[in-house]
Image (cartoon, rainbow, N blue to C red; front, top):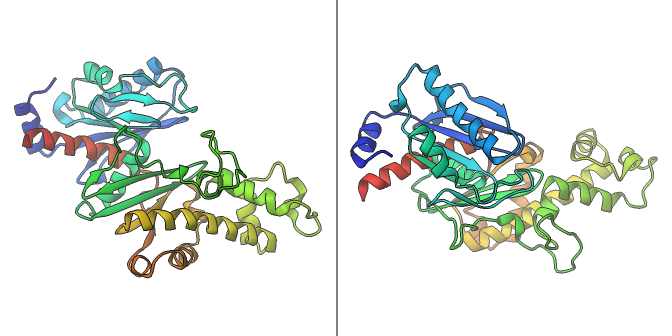
Length: 334
């Protein structure tokens, strides 16, 4: 592995880091420098099994090295963002996700470093996305930045005083599992009831739609034609086409999203929220801001802002790369 002199040389040469975003269906990678992507991203389908995933990651690293016709030291380090709970000190996957079966227990940092002979940092994907948002927006000196990922579920990351907040057991920032209700009305995929994710995610939006459509007919709204097969896309399209019931469903979903953000605002009083993920395009940010302000203390509401991500899905890549660079700087400083 590299010693401190070699690391110092890498950083003085202002070399980029490679950020890798590992998801359940695809692995994306790009070179990152000064908080922005400086290469064409590459993408492969996520293979089955831990050994094949590791091989895919190593192949991506070697492809970037070959593309640049560079030697090993053309890349300062490799940052990997992955779903699941990660011990960021050891780079071991402590808790996996259903999208990556058999991933838990993988000593990812150790295995990858042994094959590419470059510094590697492994982090949770939502944490990396939050760090990427803060880095790209020049907010690393802010008190607190909260990234909220709205997709099939709800993920999040907290950057406090320029550092990732990971909690005492590497599970901090699991904001999707704030509890919104005490009635045990909706079962979350985590096994608990009434989590924010059960209401504010894509699955939550569809569930809200089914609740509201119960008892309605196709004459009242076309959404009632297939209540059990209801999709988020159908709801959003109906609302945009002026369907009153579709608008009502989408408005209720905004209420649910606002409720979770209001709770986080009271706990953290952040400089700002950044909303990312596949459902960010469905958010009316003016409406959401108004709903949150109505639910928080005036001192918090008058200072708080909610922004849409401008990184087009690259936040995890940027954050993963920036984390490995910043960790290398920390090692030199010690």
